[in-house]
Image (cartoon, rainbow, N blue to C red; front, top):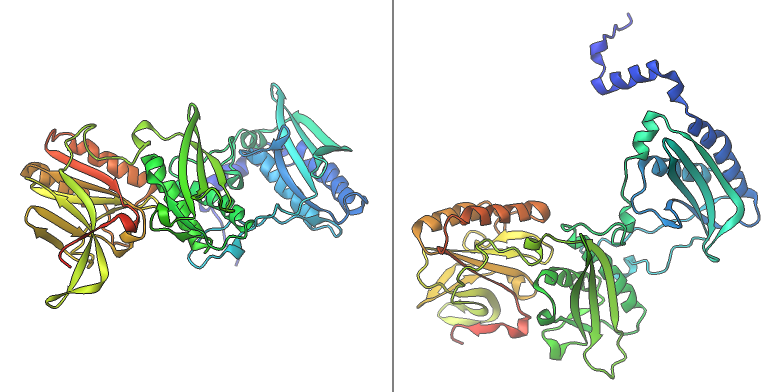
Length: 469
């Protein structure tokens, strides 16, 4: 027996779409569809497959804005370009250029994953759509000779007309070309510091590969790098090290190349981030490298690592990094050395430590719970053991103290929402910033009762030894 379907069995969105098509059957196939399917596509595939100039040459279809690729193409143009490239790829005699994926710098990545040579492309088929007047839209297809950097004469077609509602909505909806991130027209967002660093690291890595130097030692000059740019510089250094292209120096005297970071504000909402590497010795034949990418301006309270306190709170008397010798029975072990944060807290009811890692993650230091050690006291000094990676990885540390019991309870309650260093949960980007803003806002009700100090981990050679040998 056949099954009876009721109208309630259809999802509402599907029902609305079906009713719209039934009410407007002419919209099922538009004038643009007919032109694209019956005129443009057959002509272009035949031309690319048989014309001596294009046959066998690698081509790519893309969306243009004027004379350049569009970083934010509308959805209608994006769909048309994808359909056109699909039709061309299905035709024998047409060679579609492949664009390699950018490296992801995962563990186990090597320099062989890099694609430093420009993609093999001879021609770009450029599609652009423009509203010319009123509701009138022009869709144009041209062919760009990349070697000559000029449009091919006589190879172009265009359509003009009024778009139906379904196409007009897609035409008015911009998309994003992620492969063009970092250009002026599509800067990295303020919470995409890791992606920005990866793009700059790719450029720097290719420059290093073009030079015969074997794994030069790199040191980041934090004194010449603004605090807000230190995470980007640290991530670039880590990405290069993961590819096996560099070694991390213990100090400037031990380095072959010194890295610095700069950020230039270009206008409302736009910045340019530069990473530079310079030889430490003028006579060296090592390369001098500069790479940049565009980024959206950070709000003023994020132009430096956020601090969860009032604008000018009193600082803790002493906060610095030390290396602790661990005990083996009654004696001190020769190794390993344990990185720790040494604090002279004064009269505090509570002390909490937050860490901002090089990749932007926000974590809470909980040495006892995470099994990395415990809090030790030596007179007026308190030493809090850090994760072992802190001796090798540049991170930002915020030591936050409460001077009254009530402020201490509030501090403990707010900090507890931040994942501990051993938790699998990750807090980064917008959620991490929101967590810090909430912490700052709620602690504002305790003026002069919260003290803090923030600092970045120094290079291993600059960390002092603590404890008796």
